[in-house]
Length: 68
Picture 1 (spheres, rainbow, N blue to C red):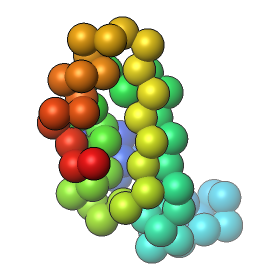
Picture 2 (cartoon, one colour):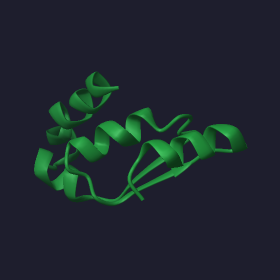
Picture 3 (tube, helix red, strand yellow):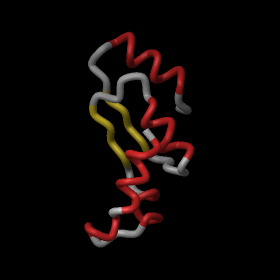
Picture 4 (cartoon, rainbow, N blue to C red):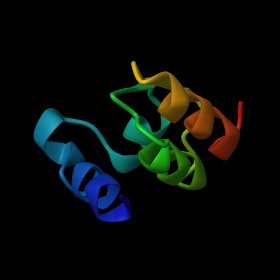
């Protein structure tokens, strides 16, 4: 999941933003599964993240994995 975030941040200039601006933004992950990408976002310094998951068991496991 880190390569996914690296790609987004490396291409920030294409939407006229900097890496630090993207880190400071609010992030939404639809279909967050076990919360793996949310975990990577938190480790990168993203503070405002919402994960949405329809599968109840996955949602509970994601909540246990990441910071509130």
